[in-house]
Image (cartoon, rainbow, N blue to C red):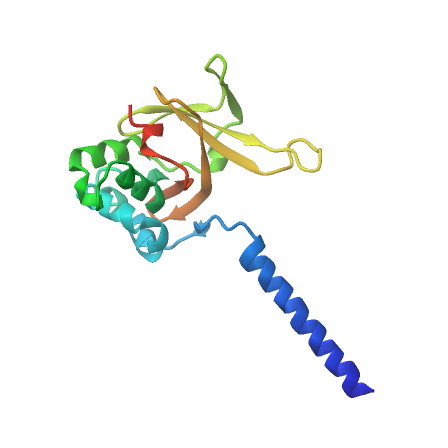
Length: 210
């Protein structure tokens, strides 16, 4: 009887382990971008996450801006609204290009400069706010200067189970002249010389290229 009980417990354990693994692998929506603190430069963090950032690194080097991401340039701390590999590859396909270096260095520098804020910004630094789409009115939030543009950034806290101000805090921004508001996909990735606020895989250059 003890052997049967032990066998049943073992089968149940294996079943539960399988269910847990299945939920983790197939049902959990993984953003693909690591959260947390990384004891290295932003550049070295990118090197550790090539799945998301290898094309980004090529774009940065092609633009002649690697020093900015290594913390060696004139900006000791930055916040990067991080454009990921998939967005870059989408742009290349749309424009019949085969590799990142087919884009001009000037174009790469222009795009990256719009996405670099020359100071460290965490989600907790951004006030609650909103942008009213019908009028373009900006409420709360804050104006932020990037290296080559100005944007309006705000946070919004979602309700949870009908209770206000207890749910997820989402980070949004709108760049001057852009057609739409954009949400940060993966927030507060901290490195020694700045913070990555990563854009979604659905981000396209046309969102800010004006």
